[in-house]
Length: 407
Image (tube, rainbow, N blue to C red):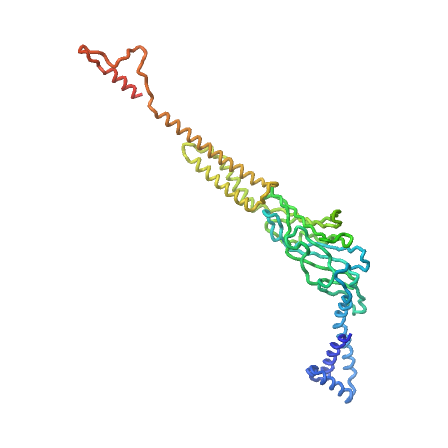
């Protein structure tokens, strides 16, 4: 432990020269400092107060600068990060874990995922990282880079990025009794099946599965730990979603012999915005669509009216297609409602076209000239009477034709 005394002795010489009112810069040259100390011993006896002060400061500095380094050297001299933290390698390691969601960034209904910031509190006991506090001046806790020690195998299933880990935290806290605490955290994007049938009055449940990736319960077992505070209150306020509950349950997978912890986040959509900007316009358009047949056909505006409503409903369907998930399991009721009124617009347009076409055909038939027969009961067929000169008078025939044209 040679380096153990070099730094404190350096500071002791600095303090000794300071008490003698001499320049501490002479410490930069060890030979000069040593010469001055030797000269002091030969010339006069140093003051006992100065000697006691130097000894006391030497002890304090020795404890401060050597204890933490000595603990780390003592713990990791023969430590192996690949070994299970048990002296009996057949013994099970219990991992206490708790999850915290800080803020929800996005809930995507179309692509079915949720994105949020969060972190985990992971605790376990390492039997190789223990020391006696009295031998190291009462130090109870140290921080160690997590790459130097054993960390549990924990993964977040159905995650886009952090499949084989829970994120990164550079340091791990270790106590003198071997209790280890790790706080990994990151931005997580997890697949979440969202049911939007009752949009915008829907309530969602999103499950986050945490378990080991390739380690069975014979080596380590995850144990969920409850918190004393309500986790929902710790989530930041969101303008679109209202978070109602955050629970967990422990499930055992017999096929792979491991324990899965399923965290469930329950939240409900805030519907006021969608009620004003989506529901009310669609209801108003549906009422207007029901009044289509009250418009007279003679006005010629029924077809234009129906086509305007048809285009408006088509725009709403396009907006829903850009936001709603493209699946046939849970089709939103509002999408079915808009499609129904779109079909009514088509029926109204077709009926209006047929009605107008039929009425115009009747008007054309009424304008044709009617043919009156030349025969009439009780009268002889002649165009006129024969005069004495042998000629026919055509007055009666002309009058008959004139009456026919008038008709």
